[in-house]
Amino acid sequence: MLFADVMQQFKSGQPDELQIEVPEQWGQGRAVFGGMASALAMAHLITELPAQIPLRSVSVSFVAPLNAGPATVSRRILRQGKSVIQAMVEITQQGQVALVLLASFGAERPSAYQINAEAAPDSGTQVMVLPKQGPAPEFTRHFDYHITRGAMPFSGGTGTELGGLIRFAEGESTTVGVLELLALVDAWPPVSLTLLNQPAPASSLTWTIEFIQPHQGAETQALTTDWWSYLASIEHGADGYHHIEAKLWQPDGQLAAISRQTVTVFA
Image (cartoon, rainbow, N blue to C red):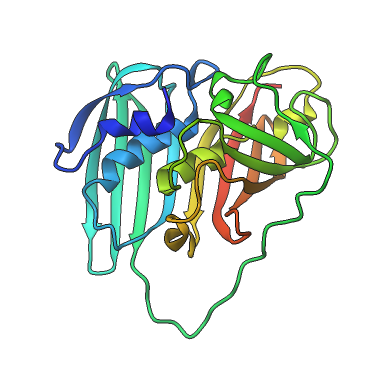
């Protein structure tokens, strides 16, 4: 099922607690892909919030594996002021909390200070294409990857960076909003896997992502079939936990999102 088709189950006017269907063919190990799980939670939240207040930050805890099939998503507005909205979403399955998401929305404020972010790095000329078969997780078939920095997963690399270009591989071209951005950022394998010389499991424990303007205004231009730039690096790794910082840039080179993950590595 295409990403856009999955999101069709969310509409305005639905109750705060909603029964949903977690899609098949989006698996990552024994659970659904984290970017899809986070997008399911966010899709239920944004249908009831003012569109003119942009999403600024999301924090996700992956509490338990979320599997394909029925699940319950519930939202709660923690505080809604004139400029800022704080909200929470939970996804439960078979009586177990699988995901908790906290989101912060904030309207623009007048400011005399503006610090421009760095543009997207040069993608380079040496390209490795992540295969859609073999040990790659099921969900990666929904994306195209051109790796231009770092090494392939499970190749025994020595660097601490991984990056390149990414886009949705799905046929229909649609505009990119915050739901698609969640998927694009999380679709990359953890840099940690490039250090391993054989397949081993890894999973995200926590994930924080911040959305940078002007991506809100670029949504009418950037498409799922456009190439987005990505670069991640391990800031520290020990005792089975790796702390990874990453950035995603729009097709025009402007920064769209900053991501931080705590990844558990079972190797």
